[in-house]
Length: 395
Image 1 (cartoon, one colour):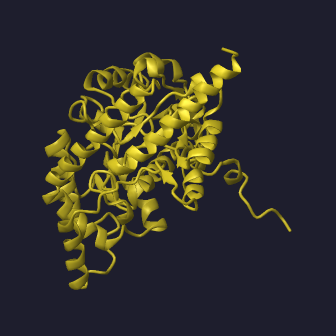
Image 2: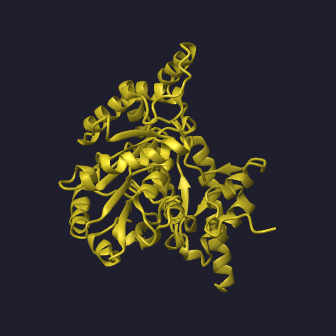
């Protein structure tokens, strides 16, 4: 028989995020800090709206681009929160989560050989999506010394005549890094100088703790060069509802929508009705969840400080990215030993790019009680490693 598989797909590795989660799920007393899934239930008023839509029999397809009412509310929300506005008829459409929007943007914009710059460490989907869209992904390695932010110098050094798209993954998963207005203004000059486009993944925009999130689309001259991607999973605790959206120039959005028409048809109808209510009445819910996450963030940072483990201070998302280089083992080895001896699952930094070596991603999208138990075990593990290191040194 001939090989039934695409030569491209077999080169792509499975996501490194779920591997340890699946193992710890079968362990008695196991604790997983590996998945970025809010532990809050979707607020009741959002669920009630979904239930009401079902009771009213609103179970048909919507427009390919999504409910008009929802697109209007998305525009109002973006204007209210981030000072950017889009035409609901031509510049906004609703997707099956933010991940679909990333895929569609690359498929609509890339020709074979076009380069996509991907700052790393970052979310696992960007590189594979670029490959599947016949593009060439190019990593830009971010560092703790620069607070894991993308600098204008790094961007300028990475640009070639083949570069077409910059992925902007901020607030960042896994580091929790953010880009402030001055950072964005600096890279915007490079983007305009080299005639690049931006896919700005802003799914964690509501989870910022330093100041309000700034979208690069709000920087002068950048709206027409940017596809803004966002959704409801992280901000409104609606992961399983599978709802996101893309906003940008009609020229690009119309082609993304064409792919969406053939591949998906439309996003889930019930989820769309629920999302209308989420945007109209959910600001207080978002603020409460953000404050809870901030408390957990501060708790984890204090625990790492107590155990003497270096950890960059994150100002966005709900992850910390501690450094474990002092122990002389790879991130993968550390994660496996921690899971085996203490039954705590975290994600090796290498799941988010090779430059994540020497780091771990720990999610604080879990209750404070769970985090306390897990951190006690991690502290015990770190202490044992240090004691063993001293003994091996003959001290």
